[in-house]
Image 1: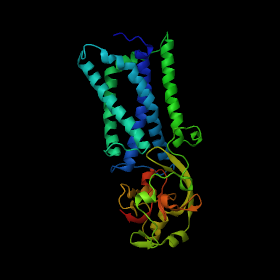
Image 2: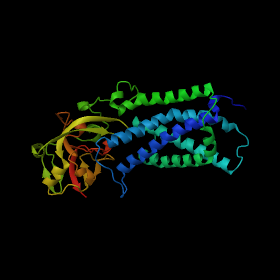
Image 3: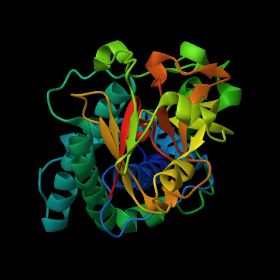
Image 4: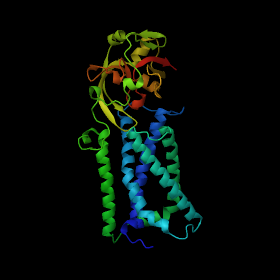
Length: 354
């Protein structure tokens, strides 16, 4: 069977593969960062400044994943004729190449498809997404490295300057770049504010209580207003009136969720450092934050010392000038710079010094 289309040319395949590799590299590195922040190994350190650092890295993670979808489809289209080659296995390197392509294709599709379902918060699968997504990412990267090692001579030859470029091949490549660009622009508004009016497929907006989206409502968390609420910090208890009477700090900080969306808001509250001092604890220690929520996977979070000593890490009492809505964590919640939204614990009732 003969495949003469310019789309099936090694030069087109190599160029698409180069950009796909860059997209996967960005997605992989930023994914590792996000995973390490949520499940930090003992050696890991994540700074609290700049305040938008996590917003940028996680935005890049999701945007690069979206960009990779049309690139992957174009790459597979350009190489699928090789499935019809005979014999099936010509040599050991050829067997490694075929095996790596099979594993790479499966892992890449798994990562991109489950990632899209995750940003849509549509969990049609039964496995725990973060663990599976993290594990398969290593499989994908390993198979990419094997594939590159086997195909490096071909890639080098294909990426050399083309003295007589084929117009139809150029058209195929331009269509691929355009499709990838459109996919990015149509979705990037979830984290890039100036694109929000043109990102027609963005899965979050400024709609929500007090102008900030909500992933988990108070009703879903089983949390209701408790008139007897107090905040316990190192054995000392603070009422809401006492917290409100302490010096307040207002800061513009983003909620940046692992699903890629982010939204800035003006938060007002008491710096965690001041609350720790009032309880006789020196800021800079790690604390475990407890929520009134009883059954959520993220009803507790660990706030590292780098964040507890940062004056912009707040026990927020107000959002955009209003008392916190129940869905945003009334009576108080954690708002810390450069932190995933899932770790900005809501409905806080205890800070435990670690």
